[in-house]
Length: 299
Image 1 (cartoon, one colour):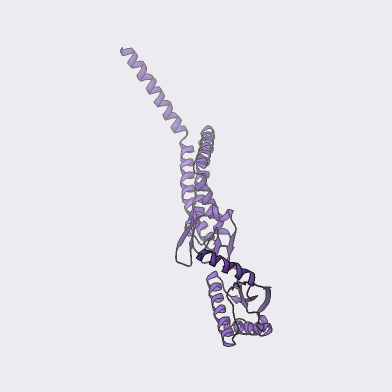
Image 2 (cartoon, rainbow, N blue to C red):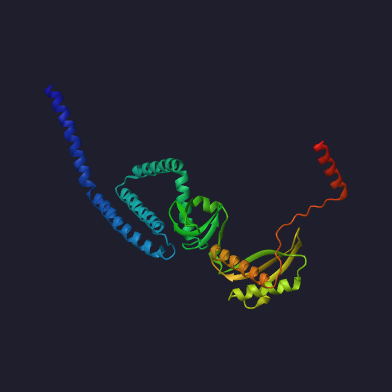
C-alpha cells in the first residue's frame, strides 16, 4: 500500500516538475504572448474610437456606427489572440478555434437568419444616399417622414402622426419613393365644365387662377391645361403645374388650394361645374303600358 502511494506521489511530482520546466522554458513566449494580447486590447480601443470618428460623418445612426466600429475592434482583438497563440507554438489550438468558430458561425447564422438579415440591411441603408433621416418616403403602402434607421428596422412618422415600424429587409426588397430627393413636384388637378361653357375662357381662367395662387409659378404660360374627354355630363380637363415641395403633404395642400381657387374663379364668371346627371326619357307607348297596368291593378 505504501509502495503504491509512493509510486503515485512520484508520478505526480514528476508531472509537476515537467510542467515547471516547460513553464520556465516557455516564459519568454508567454511574456511575448501576454504583451501581444495587451497591445491588441489597447489597439482595439484606439481602432474603435478612430473608426467611429471616420464613419460618423457618413452614418448618422449612432447604433449602426457603433456596431461597425465594434466589429472592427473585435477583429483586431481576434488577430492579436491568434498571433499570441502562434507565439506560444499552439498551432493545433488555432486550428481548433477556427473550426469551432466556423461551426458556431453556421449555427448562429441559421438560428438568427431573419435578425441578421435585418441587421445587415440596416447597415446597408445607413450608407445609402437615397434615404436619410428627415426624408419623406413612401414604401409598402406607407408614407411618412423617416425619423429613425435602427439596426433592425426603419421608423416612419405618417402625416396623421402614426408611427410605422418596417423591417430593414423589407425596405431593401421593395420599391421606395423618396419625395425629398427633389425640390419640385408636379400637381395635377382634374375637373369638368358644362357643355355650354366657353372652353377658351375656361382655360384662360384656370391658368390665371393657378398662376395667381402660387408665387413660384412665373406666369399663366407655365401652367399646363388639356381637355381630356367628353364626359357623361361635362367636358373634362386636366391642369398641371410645378411647385417647390419636398413631401407629399405639401403637394396635397397645393392641390387643395388649387381646387378652391378654380372653383372661386368659375363661380365668379358663372361657369358651371356639373355633377353627374341621369336623364330618363319616356315615350307615348311606355306611358300607355303604364296606364293600362294601373287600370288592371284597380280592377
